[in-house]
Length: 555
Image: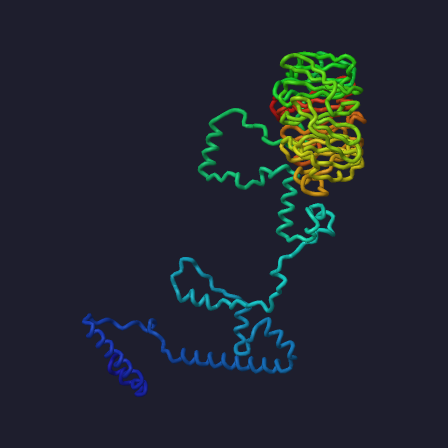
């Protein structure tokens, strides 16, 4: 600046500006001299830091205003609190907590935490502040002791739960026990645990294995559809075959049809006094042999357990014929010592081939030795014997009476193990047991078939049936289980086409049997082949109808 212009400046301006500039320049020179660097130019006036005194004053004014506002809010709140009743103040403290000291704490609590934490954050101070901002966990005001107690379910006053009671002490069950009981009932109804419910058998393959399977599938050709291992419900795959006795036709009623336990042979017997054997091929069924019994209309014929003999009884005779298939001899048993029966009709052969059970009159059942045909002992029930059968292990005998009761006998001691009333039955007509020892089926004169568990028939005084089949309206005279215990055949000889096949796992009837175009007529006897591949039945027109079940092998 020129000297003349410098002298023209006002003295107060020079006094206000020069000392500051000189002091600042001296301090900058000292700082540069201390560092040993070259002198640097002063920063432009636009980059200079403004003085801090105005900012501090503004901050102090803002803090004072906020404090004054807080004080006014507190004063207004206290004024309002004085007018509120004590109950309302107590309720606000329970809901919002005690916020007398700071009203802003309530607002922060209602807004909730707004700090977002990241997993890869290394700033411990931010994490600590975020943790402190979370509201504290409140404890419940009271604890109900009944919530910890196990809730009991009433079993008596509910008609659906009442059937699941095993004894009178189970009037109330806990929820866990009721759930287990429902699971057991479901498994009994389904014949075991369904495949979809067995979690331990589910495959847990990785993605690599699935990709390998897909690649393997794309590299091969052929039929990838296979039959199921379990019999499906609803529709049964069945095919009509040539009648078993097509090579020896007759017009007399067929009283017995049975498959050989080991060979591919079927036996047909009826009121024409003949027992015929046919080879089963499903096409022509050629005849093997016929045994004619003079003046002996056959009431029932049956193979022995080993298949070496054929036993036959008549309608009006007490003679029991035994045909030895190995030797080709016909042996009549005219009289059994100790057996005082005028007629011998109904009989059963034990599955192990050791015993022969003959149903007599006046409620008597006679147990004979299969080998010697000698009497071992007799058992008596109240009323008459309508039907009887052995258990699958040949250790027990189930007898159905004409009074609607079922008796369970021990074969070795001939003592009654249990006795119960067939539910809803006035008169029993038929009874059968499954080969796996699971079910007992009882047919009554009203057309109802009750299916029981064998364990409940042995242990309970009033067992409840697993399922009641009510698809027939006349008396059930024939009951047969399939070898795999998947099908139960029921029939009534008092009505035409009165035959049904029951799917046991679901206890439902197959809808496509008998069909609309079948000519089954009155059914008197039924049987399944040893592996369930064929199903045969005999009617009053002299035909032994035979059907092929595609779900099973032939024999």
